[in-house]
Image (tube, rainbow, N blue to C red; front, top):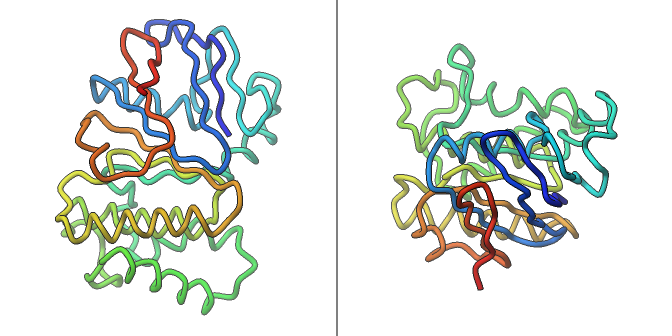
Length: 218
């Protein structure tokens, strides 16, 4: 899925190596929010290494054309900590906007899938409202539905458990696990600064980012 081979980004990564395998679940813990946010851009192919190699779905990112890179990005879903919703679109419009351009399903089919995902993760607010009044964690829950509707091969979860009650957290983790298992080879990548994350996720690999390098925890 994503492989770093002695990848360096000036002022950030220093000959860093890591592997997120197909079908696996990986957690990466950073020391600062700045590091986490920049790492998210690197994983998504928005910031490229200055040296070394980064492979995205088995292809070296520097060799990809703009169209090929866009195609690879469509295979990645991102659930942002703040939800990443557009303020002047209703919640349901935010959720369906990306998939409406790419899915062959009719509108009714998309609506049913959206409601199913929202029910599973415990979203209980009006989806016809604008997202502004919603607490941040509910915007994030809407972001879950938006990412999952795209049926990506990899979802990156950006500090998604912040502020969740134990009940909602359990529903979210169950939905993540179920979603990953629905498609062979699908992977999950968790980014966070809180080691408490490891108490309630299932990760095959855990990396710590320190002073520009990844250290795998046993």
